[in-house]
Length: 248
Image (cartoon, rainbow, N blue to C red; front, side, top):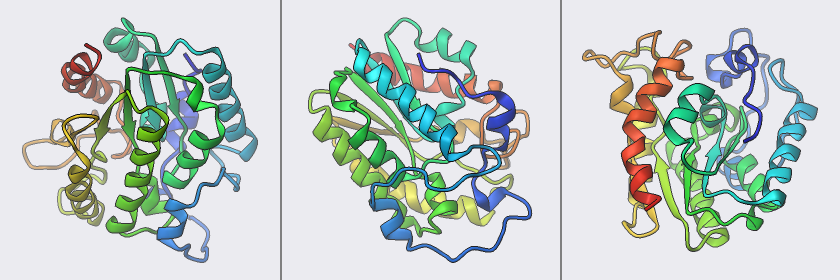
């Protein structure tokens, strides 16, 4: 199992839309950004390029070693799994966590193409990706969808016999009518169409994180983006039945 990121670093690893005092930058091409395989190329206060490269190298070492039955792939939402919760829920299987904070779909495409991922033969892959396309790529929901679709297609090519649990992008932003929420709903409506019932199984666990009002409580997502340990327990409890089924 790869090292889990420290809580201090991860708490800061929010997408730019939630960061304060972010410097003005030229807007990227949202579509090209999410579809072009590329490594991390910019230092951030919460992770340097060298730090990103170390996470990548750690995952290459895991891939070279092999012996993974259940593979988690994604961004900081995957990387931040509370270790105790993760072990209780998924420790019965040989797992690997290939989540890296801040990654958008273009970054993940590059990691899958260059990280010896083809050496693994997982029975199931749990994928959660796309939220950072909004912040780092300034992408529209349609552009994010195209990036998620490209990742799914690559995973199907690399792991033709694996079952993919395709997670909806979790809700973020504290309030139900925030602009972020509206974009996520639109994105997930498209991503749901990638479910084929044979190799790709779409699941939306977002409602489990919401209060009756539709708002997100800080005790579940401290920054209204990354789950807290309580949030990860909620997610694990909701996800585990599907994982068990895929691992049969």
